[in-house]
Image (spheres, rainbow, N blue to C red):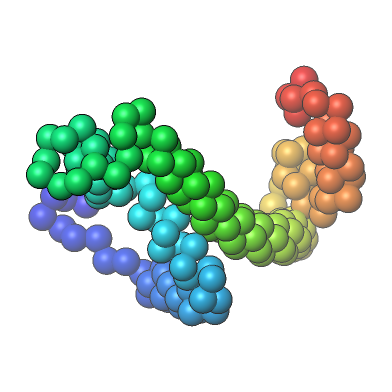
Length: 178
């Protein structure tokens, strides 16, 4: 493909993208009011405008209470009321961020479960295709000599054994490759 040729996205890929976007939109639509609020606050907390707003507000607070501005001071140095307000804000913001993370974790767990189901189904389908291809090649008289790896792949994996092995390594704290 040359630089002046554009890549045409296959319709199946576009259909998959539309389906994923529809699933994401549905998940966003089903959020409760508290989830939407937690997402909005949790999303704003980690932004530059949030930091800038705090810098301005704290700067004003300090300037007022150090008599640098013409307003009456209300929290003299060492600004104990400011410390209390910021501590309370920290607790509340942490709760909102944790609520957002919990919801995102549940969504991620749901996606992971779906991925596992698709992967298991795909593994079974590929094993069957390899097995069918092997039978076809034998039937039409393709010479023997199928690599052992292809023969191994044609057998359906014992996913229960794989899961047990994974759990054994994870519970021992051993890396899977060791």
